[in-house]
Length: 193
Length: 158
Image (cartoon, rainbow over all chains, first blue to last red; front, side):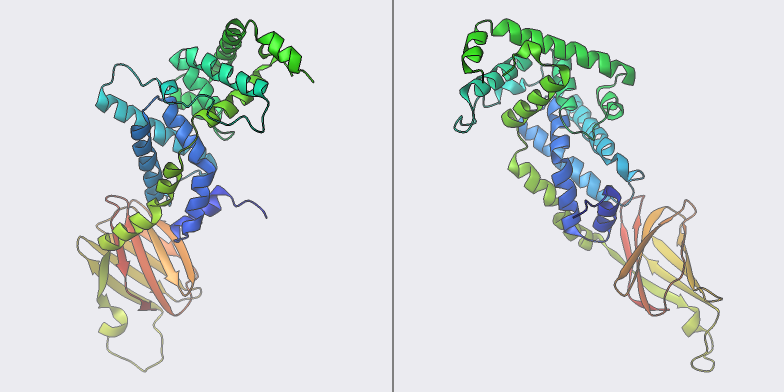
């Protein structure tokens, strides 16, 4: 089965095809959610913003000029809504999302304990990063369709700065992990295949 | 198994993606709510849809000639609260439908004929055109950009 293009899907929605909208939601819901969460909104507010974005898409679905750039349209719409909500809330301290995360919630049944431990370490190291690094890395992992152009737009930085900042943030993350797990090597080595 | 210090940027990022997905997945209710947007808005839209009634039709307002003859041009005016749609059906050669929103404004215009739905845009002067319009009943629906109001016509035989 060939994948329907975004342009086809949007046209189908305009013509009353509900299932086409569902396909778009399935395709991009993770991207939208990642963008919203990258702004460190709490869970409830994030859900409201998400709903606003999808409502806006439906209302505008006949007017998206560049369907192939839908990821950019969605992320920009999400960003604008996040900025608006944050301004309204006039919050000084953003929510520390990592508090809400269920660390190690996934049962280790079908995964090695070492792999599990490494994930926990990675997440905890991520939580130590600056807010800006957390946001950038979160966006970089969100969706392949979210390119540097879209990311630069979301974080209000020149597109040329994304690559270097990405390298710097990943380097920091790597160093935090190494620092945090000085004894981890033994565990890992013993499990090595 | 490799150690964190050995991971290159791509591997680190891809591992981070998996971890973040696991720690902060899209809540199922967010997906469900997003998918509920269409049926909910359509319901609202139905309430907000206003009907445009035919207030002028050259085919019926003119003296009736011999039944069966077709005028090359037929003009219709449809009126709804706040907006009128003027239509001209040109039948010289390929049949086309030329429309005008009054007052002039942009919008998305849908032409339904049989099972076929076609969409076009009214430009800033309120003009829109559909080419090669088949004979038979048609129905127009226009979503005005200004306020999102949907203006719909009843079935018209052109």
